[in-house]
Length: 335
Image (cartoon, rainbow, N blue to C red; front, side, top):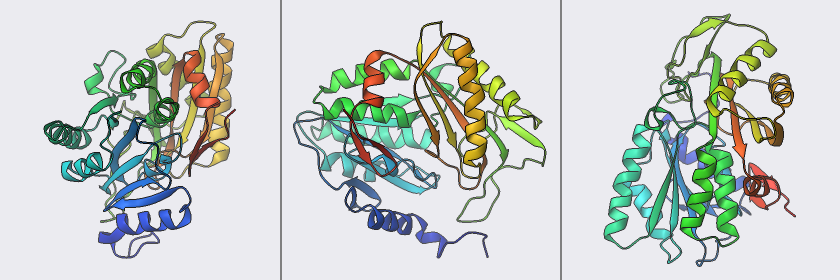
């Protein structure tokens, strides 16, 4: 018996999506097998925004389907890409003259599914372009983009490109806006306890009590090395320092700061970590112009968090703070 409130492990993805749509039926609907769509479709003269990824990371990614954000999330099995055919089915559903923006996190299965689906789409006249997120810096500050994993930084990017699409920007305009943000986005994760795979009960990795790993991936992959657990302030200072070293912000820059809990870390802890990171930025003359604390992308019961830092242009701030979104896990009233 696994220590989780589940039924048949083989039905996890279908059952969690059914429950999700039942709870938020005014915002989302099931558009096909493991395909989540907006309950109220966007006008077809606007670019559709689609993403894909494995389940088990709730609320990511289907929690961000809704007005002003994603039009569709294509869902794989637990921690697994959905496959090219299912993604191609979604691309066919959203075929339009304005085109489709496909947001892909840099993980091998997601990239393989996306590349194959886009090839099929091209053959059938579907206009689709991609943005690949690669915000994880644990591979090294000088690591090439292709070696950097996509983490929870995809979520604010989705908010930005979703808002731009909602106001009627062209596909090329949206890509320029999104890539400008993507190029100045960095995320670093820390874990103090690994997760278990909910279908087989296997522990993804083993972290002894009193140790942490900075740089652990969102499936429990290894990171930058283990060390003894230290205080919230020391952990936050080390992580924000590495993120700043990567992005090289200058006094007067405006920034996004997010603490994303990954499943078993309390809001108390996240608030305390955020406090120190915010103080470090302010002391460096950097204005935190957009912020969030909460669970955007989780890893089952993994204990730890992801710290996300982005340098913002004025249009990014406007899209994040002022443009309406109505997704179950990201709602902005708008101005």
